[in-house]
Length: 278
Image (cartoon, rainbow, N blue to C red):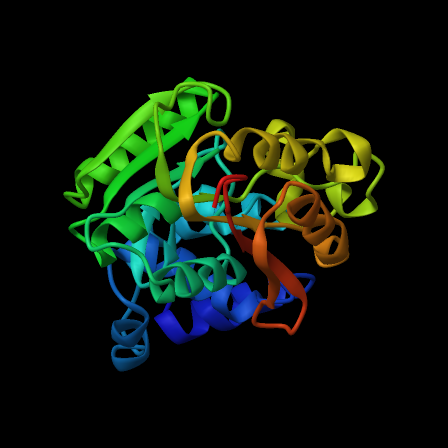
């Protein structure tokens, strides 16, 4: 079967996916070890029997809803391929908003930075690669997730420190910047039964107190682990901007603001810590 015909049939099989064409292309690229550009350039090439069999097997798994990132074992984030497993969240484009804001902050050249609940390491590793002089630490309670982050950092030669533990507990500090994409979904949210999140670890998605418990705990801990003038930056749900700003305001943070993601939804809230003596 030709590549273009295989893709046409695959798009039909994956019609229930909002990204059927892209899904099919990424899966075939994975099987062939080629880029999407190569697929389009050589669309008249015939697939070998073993290639077609492998492609069919991946399509069958995708039809059940299994995420493409789990099928290929990776997801691109900020232009880099990150390995992902069922032990980590799948990096999403909206989180790149956090990266862009962090890179624009007025931080020292040798800023000390920590990524809490790092998962695949996408946030912390990206910051370490974009700012090689920053001292970046990655923290996760899950040893399996932290191993994935460690592997990604090693694969990309990112100079990071990896620490196992709950939020800032294993960290000495103080930090110039604390970033986190923590669990922030309420356990009753219907989105947990839809799409890719069905296959992602609930511990990385769900938090008590209507999704705010972990966000509140990070704010509480951060006040004792930031330098005077240091920044805390949190990703959260699109309806949680006001609540997260209130958490930062109550903890004495200044210059508190919320940034929108690619879809125009509240996604990242940040504030600058000011000690009581300043």
